[in-house]
Image (cartoon, rainbow, N blue to C red; front, side, top):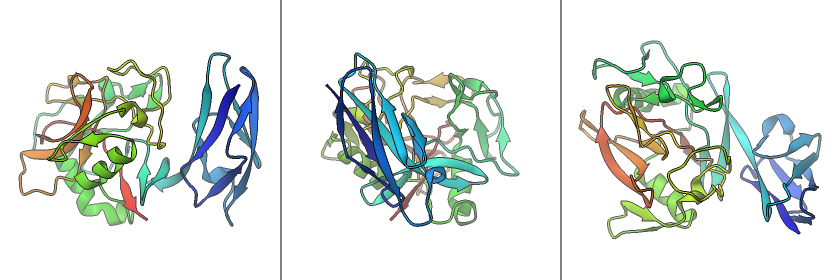
Length: 277
């Protein structure tokens, strides 16, 4: 039998019954959804399956041992809806930010480090993602500083994550750390999307244990070249007096762990927002 279950990471919006079903390979399982007051199917997204009213239907292939559908909430920023997940005592945006403002320059690569810049993943403006899936923009440090300064008008209550937010996330995903809490090792695929079409540096299929939905974006330099594109990298709050160095969380070159480290201000990386709940 195949284990099929909904992984609800927006418990403030919806619950599901039963919590798990066991069905034969190649068949479907159905779950009854109960929405909180004032909520409906338009307030959630699912990584797998279909929703019709109060019913979630999830299918599995004949080769799977289990099938998980992550059920997420939304936050709307500048008219775009981003899926969210409650992980511990934080709510994470589980898509990379795609926010533009007057004064943000978007180029394949940039020629100055004195203004906020952003670029498209792999330089592809039509998709800037993988197989047509938009992955948000990649920003330089000045753009991240702009977001930090203006966040209350952009997305009230949200913020660029700091190192401690990532530390909490990594531990909940089952990773262990060194004495300095800067290197995290273990099942990093627990943070990866379950989308089997994605190309990662490690062979394991993502389990998306927490609903974080990580994607391999890498980062860009001034030449427009993408580095580490089979690994994910995300900005952390700069929170330093340096204008030359920022902070990031990135899978290492051999994809054996994740590091919290400094990066050049002219590197361009994606960012995901977080809020305390």
